[in-house]
Length: 473
Image 1 (cartoon, rainbow, N blue to C red):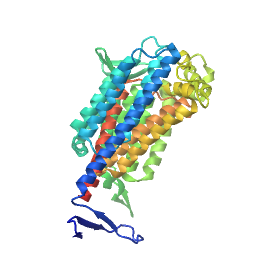
Image 2: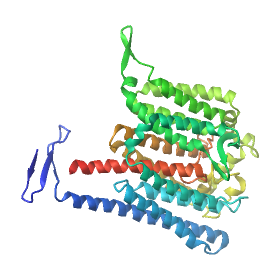
Image 3: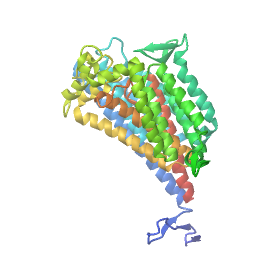
């Protein structure tokens, strides 16, 4: 119940839920609140801008050091580089300030830092490449920021996505089978994941995984009670009705089957982990995770005997030194690069990873960072990812609706496990998966998709913080 003080500001008394708490929480709302809210909003965005400028400064410094190391002079395109790096970051910041003013202030600066450092390393490795990758990565970064702004503009409320559940499932299915279509599908390094339209090559599975997150979240929330409570009596026991699992198993099964036909282990594993993680988060039933683990073990065993790529990756993982100049060369040189870097690294521009690894800009870019920046540099990159994952989980916890909570959690699962799988493959903790390091590795499909993912997280974050303001107003 509220009362009014001498300044005519309403004082609302909230009794804490904790029965052991001995004091009442007093929150003053009313006349002073809009000013306080505006100040907090400005503080959040100013903090974001400051960290963006710091990230841009670190990226620029790294670019200058690379050029000094390779050419013993300042880069001739420094002004262009500064304009692109800072310009894109400022565009993303202004879009956030306009379209999602209450969004998290940490995520965007971290992404700017990772994207910038990734570009610097890709441009540095172009010294050994037959075709330069740096200009393409810069172009994809521009497209990614553009789609980030467009996503914030189009998705006004996260709940709007809930209306398109089956459309998302249908779109994901189409995107997954597109690479198998004649005339547009393209096979690269043994995997049929690409579509080729004119001069553009794209991996539609990257967009498909976002569509699957939205579909899974919407379906799980609607059917959660049926998946957790026993509704069918068998003897003296109530068991869960299996019918709600039909569409889910169909969607997940077709996705994994498509990945198997396309000979891609990495995305099949990522989609499987995404499905099981969101199922567990929605239902809280550990038995589903155990059943998933059994299915995974059986699938790995069958895949190693049926799919050549699975068998090959497992063989390389077990003993890459059996073929040190063939399939085992990349993982061997990757761990040698990490060992060579030591604690402080050899210095930017001083590594030799690009000489011995076929495509260091993609799968093994972390090894290049390890060689040139050492343990300190790779730890900083890991900390950046940990902060992103932590921010994503915090957004999921504070989201306004159950649907938004599960979407944010699913998007964070994608980032976290994709990062884990690629780093574990480089370190030989797991077999190589062929996935890209989010915002760092070369790859336009991955880069633009992760910017869309970032925009969705920022939208959910802004809604959650807006809700807190509404509760106090």
